[in-house]
Image 1 (spheres, rainbow, N blue to C red):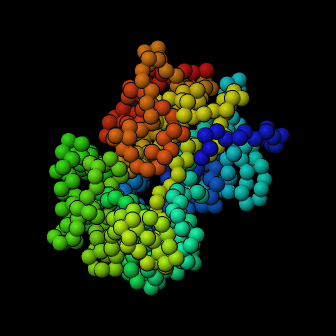
Image 2 (tube, one colour):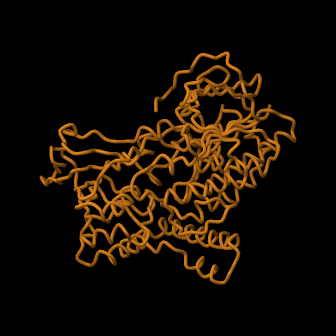
Length: 500
């Protein structure tokens, strides 16, 4: 993403007006539409989606085996029970989202093929003016809205992150990134190398293993994984007892959230014990003679980077069965028949999959302005990771990195609806956040403390993100277990909120 975007010239096109405009029809945008419909009936709103289908990540990603790395009892919405295996395929998630849309009559609010180019706020009118283009027809469109709800996610769906390695142009085989997986890619009987060790690599490797000659996961350094059955014993027992699915969803959800809270705290309070437990589960599958220290023992403590769940240990079973393997080394360069490693070994391959991550995308690469001045988000300070100083009437959904994204999407949905009601009760048309007198001397820090959480996409893109303060109100603390109580208690008449 460029540090600043170029503003388009105003147009004279016909303008449509809505009370709220939502950008994105992924998990957050569909959830936002639901909350508006049920908590603010009568609110006019539209959802603009650049793709030709709802679903976000679950629609744009087509790589083999694509699945959630969070359980659907918490990644699913709180208002709709999840009734299948906790780790779900993209198809299952899309079906679930489609049911939410159909059951709540949301389809009439969603417009596909709409790419938002600019968003300009005027304190004179207290309105956002949004310029968009129909990607299927080329038509330019203009909307105004009293409130802008950014639900577009946090990474670029069209330009994945792929490092440049020497010799890539000499490789005679196929190089593919999971985000742009060709539908006609034939990998049956082929030798495959998957570069990376995150959740995507851990999904692609076991999915491809049955059909390829061999698949190798090539990593510079190991990452932590959790393993277990792709089932929740409590949910199975409650279903056997004939308990209503709504009750099951809530009970299982609370159990998982409690266990996640305990696990996350333990990662900080007793990291070596947790590390031993995680590695022990891997050793149980791979056996005592496998080199766990080299290939599955990270140099950082658990939860400093995201921990992916490996359902039914399928990644490790593929390795134990001989169809998959792990190599921990550095790439020297690509060669005609594969990859030359720093150790001198050549990984021969027909297909190389670069599961190397993505590029951070701050608010959809939209050119924002306020009162005619281009907005640089890195100059703003965030209010609880969802509002920003000098950006009126806008909320951004940025979910959790140590828990399911949707948990925060639901909390933010409640907050937005409460804000809209509060503004109506006060008879005002503008809300923005500003540092209070007692805040003006506080230290301004990067968006995320990299000592606490440091995935590559955050480290590469942190300079694009807003600042955080050293007080709870002015940061995204990544802690659902505190925010679930804090968000409903936010005082909308606190001095941090300025109305007009």
